[in-house]
Length: 387
Image 1 (cartoon, rainbow, N blue to C red):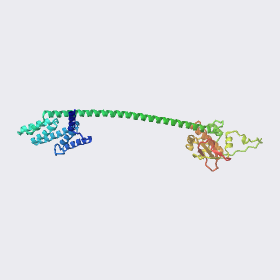
Image 2: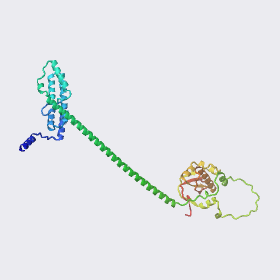
Image 3: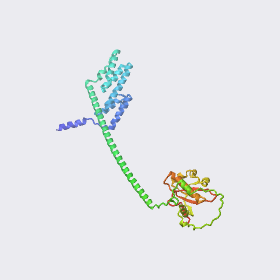
Image 4: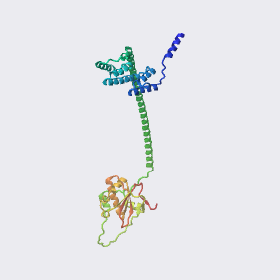
């Protein structure tokens, strides 16, 4: 038992110690690449690719990444051999090949270049250097290098499989992450839709409640006295009721006859729409700013021209669009009443359900008659002077 322990200790003492870190091995591989690119293949001493290849193999004998670089090193020597052979220096060309045979006998193109050098030496009559036989690899060396190449190929395949496996795992993780992100996005969008719907419903309920409150507090509209008249307003009837003002003419006075005087009805007994309008709005004044004011053509007013409203531009359209109330400013109330009827008929051609809210303002004899449009009101545009 004691002998076995001593043998085991001796084996441990003779085993190589691998102290290089992965970072140091990577740096060594980079140095080999740079040396091959600079053609520092086996010289100068202490700074060449061959020494670093041997160092890497000693530090990591089972790391086959160096095999690829060993073949690159051999291919560089084969290129140098071709240049020497082209220049007729066959001995130098053979020397390059001898180095490759010893280190990387399975380098691609090595056997073809060796045949080319042998043929060139044979044709030139030069003897093949004796060193060739000494450095030529035996069958055991070739077999060893072949095993290294096979191991390197297997390691490469293993790394490829692992890389593909990692790629698949990453793809699956990405798909799962995308699915979770989409689900979370859908959840948030649903919550936002529900929040907006609830907010819209609350706003609608609040608006309906406010409208109901306004409707409850809204006073009842009182129609204009003239518009509540039982008279059917049409062109013929209106023109018959409100005839045009005729110019005064000389009338032959007949012989006076005895007249029986009847008591004149008081203002309280007047029941016609005109009388009601006169009584209700006497002594009133305008209390709003006009939207727009139109001048009334004097000739059309004096001659009772039925197209007077058409000659006043867009007054009827604005009345309907704005639901406007009007203040008619004329010299006489007969002109006011006639204009009110013409404006009503004009507006009803655009809107059959239109109801004109109108008021009267007196005008001096030398003034210009006008019609002013005011914002719609729940009560008259005119306020009593008593107020």
